[in-house]
Image: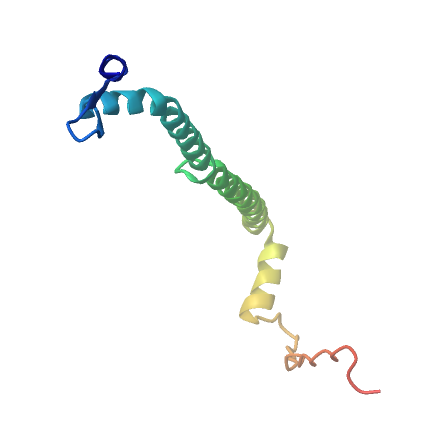
Amino acid sequence: MRDKNVQAGKNVMANGEVAVSASISQRALNWMRRAWRPAASVVAVSLALLILWHGFNGKNGLLVWQQKRTEDRQLRKEIDDLQQENARLRQQNERLNSSPDAIGQVAREQLHYAKPNEVIVQLPPEKKTPAQPTGAGK
């Protein structure tokens, strides 16, 4: 019987207990052989999730890209509005440089100048009445 236990990697002690002769390093090696695939799978899934998270929330991720795209649209609209305003002011400048009638009109409107025999009457500004709230009073 002792030969069978030795052959199986076990030692029979004097009091009949069986001691496993496999050393700790051998047991650790066996555990590593069994555990490396699940551990590698966990690491691979973790890396994939990290890459996905970074793709959405990272410095140049999808959310930041959408915000930059919205900001770009707003800035382009602002640029277009400013270009239109600039063109309008250029036309007004050209008109003021070339037309004495335009100069007279601006002088009357902004500086309150008058031609001889003209009277300027200033009306008080219109008071804005508050809008009636919907559903108020029957």
